[in-house]
Image (cartoon, rainbow, N blue to C red; front, side, top):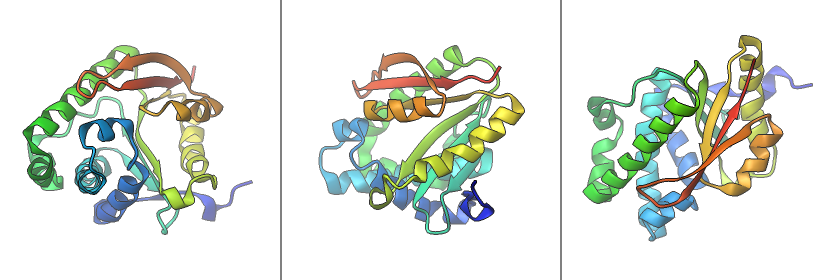
Length: 206
């Protein structure tokens, strides 16, 4: 049985920078970013800027959790119906830095993938749900149950509220892990901007 001390902590905007560092390390080998940016050092900078922008939006419009104050891993959840990040929110959250470091072509391709994923989510999950936008564990803590500690409390809450959960992953090896938690594979899709495959999954709650 899990104790209260095992429960994830909810993050606020002041912790976005630290969380972005964790997620940048967790996604350093993400297939989408590798295809966009081959140089590891530059990719790490872009990831930090990108996740700062995403986190700034998510703590206001959704819920962001860390495994513990040590921030071994971070999960970003957004309720369905939340509008996409506005230009002002993007600029305040680090979008200008992302544009400066990545360039217009990088931003265009990322936006193309984002729009494609958003349209797919609207079609495949049209009813109210929670979207697991990001789940990342710092490499030094991977394989120690951190993903489970991040997922279980929210999934239990969604069970109680009879709400489904939706996610996409661009890493095929993560599909069995999500299946273990009750997610079912809906579709394999090719993202137009990056040309990489995405696995779309849904955890139903009738």
